[in-house]
Length: 306
Image (tube, rainbow, N blue to C red; front, side, top):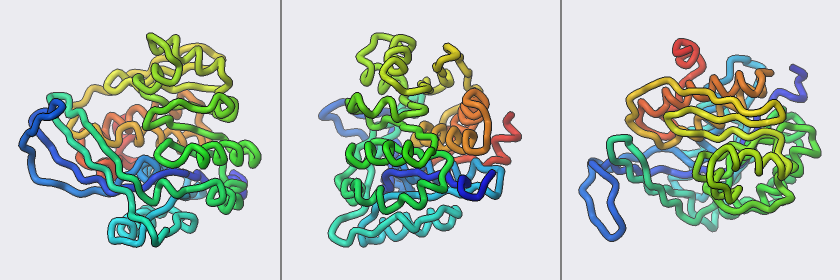
C-alpha cells in the first residue's frame, strides 16, 4: 500500500464508561439493585479506533484518532490508553474549559442488553475547524470512520474532507438522529443497527430501509442485526451474513467492534463482504467479554474463530 494511504482515521467521541450490571434493566421510575460499579475506557469513536488497531494484520497500516477530551483524569487516562494501543493521538486535543465524556451504562436481562446515557462534554466541542486542522492526516488515510457522538457540523465536514482527499468514508449513525440529506451522497458505507436504519429511513422493515438509504446516495449499507449478524446492500443486491452463536456477557461496544473491524478490513484491501464477515465474527467474540474496549478481540483471536 502506498505510504500516503496507510492510515485509518477515526473521528469521534471518547468517554469513560461507568458500568453497572443488574439482574434486569429497570422500568421508568423503578430502582433496581446492581453489582459493583466498574469503570472502562469507552466512547464510540475511541472504541472503534481501538477495534481497528487490534484488527490490523498489516503493520504498514496505522490508526489515528481525531477528537477532544477535558483536562481531567478521565481524559488523560483515555489519551494514554489510546497511545498504548499504538493509535496516533496528535489530533486528540485537550479542551481545558470542559469535562471529558462520561457514559452511564446499565446491563441486564438474559440477553445482557444495555441502556446508555452520555454526558455533555469535550466531545461536543469538536468543530469543523478541528476537522480541517487534521487535513494532512486525511490525505494519508485510506478509510475514514465517523459516528454521531460529536456535532453534526463536524460529521459533515469529515465527510466532505474525506471525499476531497479521496478516502473511503464510513458513517456509523449512532446515536440515531435525522441526517441532512446532502450527507448521504458522501457516504461509502452506512452502518446502522436495525433500530437506527428504520428511524433514518422511516421504513417498516430493514430491506425497505436499506433500499431507501441507498436511493438517497450512499454506496453501501451494512445493517447490524445483533445475534443475527448483518444485512449488506449495495448495487449487487442483498446479502446476509450470519453471526456465530455465542453466550453473551456484555453487548456494550459490539457495534463499535463491527465498525472498527469493517474499516480495517476495507483498508487492508478486502471486499465489502469479506470485511463485513470478519467484522461479524469479531463482534460476536466481543460480547462474550466485559468492557467496551477491554472486550475487543485481536486479529489472531478472530483468525482462530474463522
